[in-house]
Length: 270
Picture 1 (cartoon, rainbow, N blue to C red):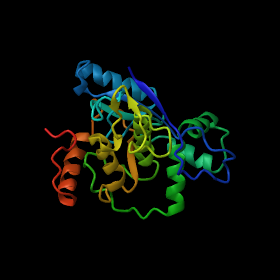
Picture 2 (tube, rainbow, N blue to C red):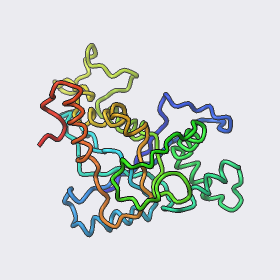
Picture 3 (cartoon, helix red, strand yellow):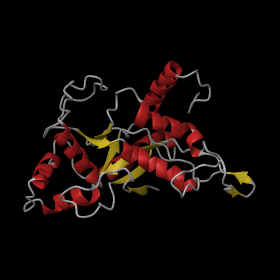
Picture 4 (cartoon, rainbow, N blue to C red):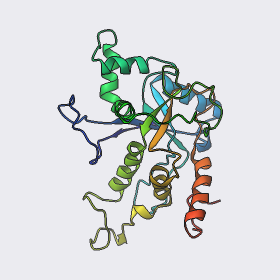
């Protein structure tokens, strides 16, 4: 029922850290779970399911996620009533900051397990920390462009309810999913000159898919909102986890209309 996904390293990731003798095997462990809109259980069962996944260590990723098609028949046959989760078994206002500090100082005596879990399953968190510490955090705009339901304890520091992940990790996972379904084993996935057919059907180019374009916009073209990262919420769900796609689709449509000729067949147009 719940699918677990391992996001492997992208080719463009710089893995020559001084302290890493070999590239890490994975960058993130993702899972997906149905939203109440999927209708397979009642809303209260949905909440119980989400709380159970939270207790297993999964946290909500603020990435607009849909499951790409499982066959090449219809490039737009996504399953949409899902949210994306990532394994990060720390809690809000929790020891994640402390675990990080210890890892940075190579002191793992008290928190041996936490440090190993962090290194083995959550390299994305380490990457983002290094990136932010290294790059200087000029990001002091008080996050006032957020949804406003935060209790004031966001941002860096011990007291944070969110941590950040490089947006290319979930986007790369979506892209890998498409590539595996649409038979793209080579570097380039072009249908122009290869006779890649299933039966008599030509395999469509997944880059024409509405959801692919939407996810690509979010990861690459969304005007300076994302700053290259997505938020991972450490809060325990008190209501079923919320799908961010509807809100973002509106933003995407406005962007499309502003920057392109009005495109009539946008993803999820009702």
